[in-house]
Amino acid sequence: MIRVGFIGTGGFTKHHVEILQEIENVKVVGFVGSSQEKAEHFAEKYYETTGYQNLETMLAHEQLDAVYICVPPMAHENYEEILMEHDIPFLVEKPLGVDENKVRQVRQKVIEKNHLTAVGYHFRYADTVKRFQEMLEEADIGAVMAKWMGSMPGVYWWKNQEQSGGQFNEQTTHLVDLIRFLFGEVKSVYAQESNVVTAKKDASITVADVGLFTLTLENGLLVQISNTSVLPGGTGEVGIKAYTDQGILDWQMGHIESKTPAKSEKYIARQNPYKKENEAFLHAVKTGDRSKILSSYEDGWHSFKIALAAQKSIREKRVVNLSELDA
Image (cartoon, rainbow, N blue to C red):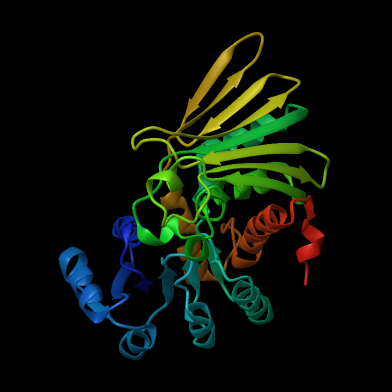
């Protein structure tokens, strides 16, 4: 039996736990919340288990084989360090944080200890992405365009640049990570952002609501990413298009479509990528075999670093090479 603890009592924790309840020989034994009351309420309402005010207390009372860290970007505190001190594997939801120095320090300790980690870039586990990879092997790519067009989440911290890191760090990072996974590593970033709508309605909003990002990959491929959070709820577009010598490959979360002069084909998703992600992590916890994990903390750092480069580009109004952020 794999005994699992959670840090965080939000929607992602609930989503992961519901998946774990479908996996044999896994038991969720405790939750850490931002307060004792909140943790207990969450644990009793949903899962009839124990809530704890802090990680140290949960570690003192529970024998844990793995921990999931599902907290906002600014709220990581020292969770990763404590878990490494206790040799407990962890899966951390993206993004890795907002504090560059803290993420660097965690990454270094992960490398030094060869600690078992996973990062919640669940798109990598989608069967549509596997099909995307197969299609790309048969084509020469000319250009790639990606977009995350949606509405602004209602939670307070998301609207605060210092707490969330903005839409590119908090949401669009999924597409950035998938671009790395499918097309190769990023060499440089040029970024522009503005707030053209939401700041007029709420002066407390400090994140941009429109962004354009040009990524030049190490293999020379150009990738254009756009995002916005000005759309009304219930509308939006999230996806990646590859323009190739064979035609257009159009990936979205639920399907991938191939458009060529001869025909158009659509492949509909058949698997739950969140479940595949959880199975890969828990398999590694149980057996030590990490081969099924598609995003570790070390790999996730390289996606986080692109968000750092984008912010540096916006501040300094220039192209930023990723090598500038190497330590």
